[in-house]
Length: 117
Image (cartoon, rainbow, N blue to C red; front, side, top):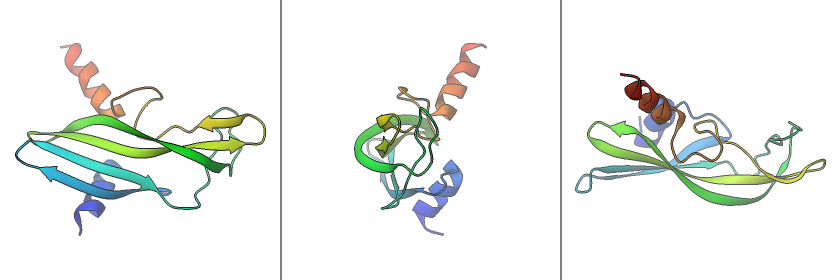
């Protein structure tokens, strides 16, 4: 199994998303995982849920993820904005993070758990 396949399974990334690359920097104790979506993918409008909206453009975003052993981990992805016939151009959500957050859902869950103890 290749690194990207392992990370994709471990992160629970499913189509149209996939792990495109990973970069492990032992000296800086950092793991960067790049996530992308397949060319020609269509997404649901985040506002009205109309399915099959085409990609208008993308914005690159990065989220802090749970540590990979003693190394900080970050997910970076091109996040599409779609053209909806009803709503216009809208930014889609990603399955690993809340809208507007710089942290993954798993990182936020760990932080909340630690804050309560």
